[in-house]
Image (tube, rainbow, N blue to C red):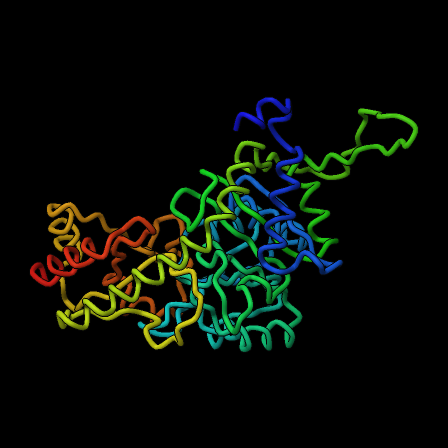
Length: 358
């Protein structure tokens, strides 16, 4: 932070450029000439910019999962387009269902947003076939999948654009912030759009402060201080994710030992270097989730819900069509604590109390 302040540049300076370069290197894309990345103010702004770069506008439709954070829907709405909500695969695979994606494609469908829930990959091959068949671009919301690997390749590298979040509860954080990764021509457009779409007039003889604006843009920049924090966080993320994996395994061991009457989604996935962003569980049928949350809180255990489906919010209630799978289990979702500084003894305490409360 001190070096940033001394540099005199607090935004759009060398630390943003360094962060972008090191991020690309971290995901093994720095040597590809046609790929680039761009820092932004949040993953939400990354989604808006990505959709805008793809030409999404008023009247278009964008297919998104219903079981995701509302930012995926709000990004679509901000461009005047309509989010089309899609079902999950099953009550143990909460990722977007490829079969339902295909059912909901219309002539107005201009993009698909997928989310690798909790850092576990969607059905990439099936979604690739759909994208190719209908010539519809795919945006990967990789906010859960920061440096999550599948088949020895980082998630977020399989489709047209990928967005990442560095919000405070993510695997590494810059407080607020995000990143967009994609083809160079798309990223070039996004870099302009993130800063009011100001296109500098090129004068090689001397610096000229003039600029042109040929379409409206945004103020979606990342500060230099945040970029400097991100550079340091990149050095620690491997250790953070390794620790998350150890804690995830300890959870599963204790749940099995205590014979807890709960289910854990994605349990059948082959153990790979996933990000293990969160530890969601599925509570028993006919239980009172609110009471369970209150009792866990009484014992000092903070929980969360990932997520209340988008179609359950007042603003999106009219946008429900064939979401039977999500409807069947969403009110039993609960997320238990998972973060690198958590101790195994804490997990033992959580499981002990959860068993007693259930």
